[in-house]
Image (cartoon, rainbow, N blue to C red; front, side, top):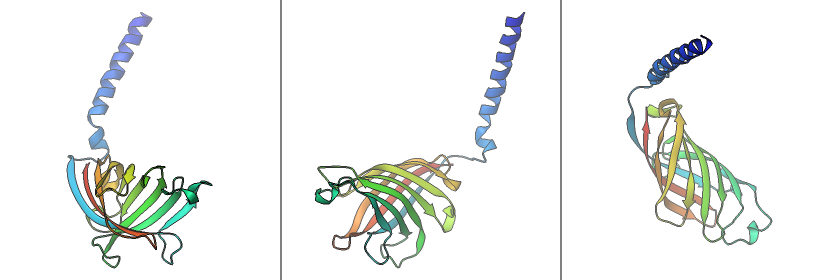
Length: 182
């Protein structure tokens, strides 16, 4: 008899779990999946300059002698703009970390959040992670999540260096993002 009661309880809980599982999107306020295309620029201004947006926070003892800056860790809070110029409309911020992770080429590991502060996606974020071999013309990194309008986001970001000033270590990078979200 006890076995029958346990079996009925398991069966009932499975039915309840299936019913709840079918409505999870609705309970979170999610609608149909959408695909969005975003185009913007970020302006990475290195430490040591008056308006720095990228700061070195750690480095290995050997980083200074490395031709690829292997072992350098940076934090960033870069403006996102609609156009290439730093004076164009600011639409958000790129905040996160990147580290020089290759001993043989200029390559970064990047973990970043893109916070949008205007327009349709105001208050929403996208989270990107990936390898950025900076000397390649086009680099692809992954969109792995987001918040607000970008809940459960997934997709990719294509980055292209628009301009680079190696003396001031300032860069303008063009970004094209394809993201699937609810």
